[in-house]
Length: 316
Image (cartoon, rainbow, N blue to C red; front, side, top):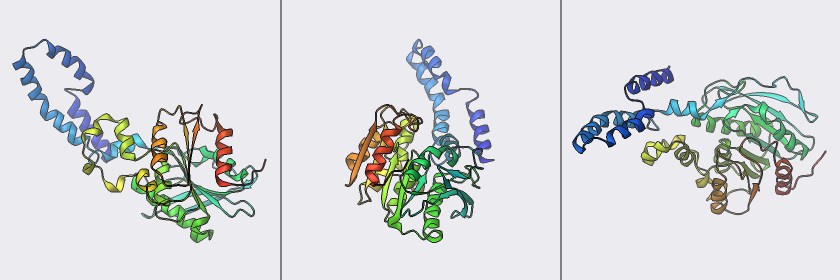
């Protein structure tokens, strides 16, 4: 309802003067005298102020959530196993009571488990190649869907994602009796913020980040230029995922993997994190990969890098 209201309000406010028309209006004004130009500009100021308020990070949070999250409800949820490892369907509760769904895949004699915090698109069923890679290396896997994704109830938001990640970690401790130091936290794209957030509060075994960013605020300002007009104070601290802050503090061994051709989250973000992170740390540049094709491009290099980092025995 809130999202619909914002859409309707924006449509009404912009009906008479849409931002797409600004270029044309500017050209017309170039041929006018200074007084007419200033009078026209003065008339635009109230509308520009309205835009500024409506598009502020706090006011337009529902709009930005729509742009950020791309969940899918459909997928191969009837799968029974991956590379011979049986899937255990898991249901647990997030902090706000929403029912979450995940897959737990235990490897015989596997002492460590990888907690996968996936990206902002699709759902856990889209990460089967990733799950298979960890299983082949002798790791158990726990992957879950955030609120509003797949079979998980609720609606997605950054706050909910943080709570969902904490609930998934707690489930491994209480239901499968892992120790914190037995858990490898893995983050993909948007999920790298959840992995780093967990690692800053828990004594995890290792951190693996695929296509990471420095902070969500920095990434948002790169993608949406007008957000550079807002001071940091207008970005809710509860809504921030700051990987730089987490990695400049003492942390578990870190592996960064990033496609050189990534246009969604440029590799410079991982390079910056690597330069600022505490040791031990490793950065792997996937020369031919972009953002969404890593499982199809450079995946052999990806697999080898993970194997070397974790020191795990590989199986066929």
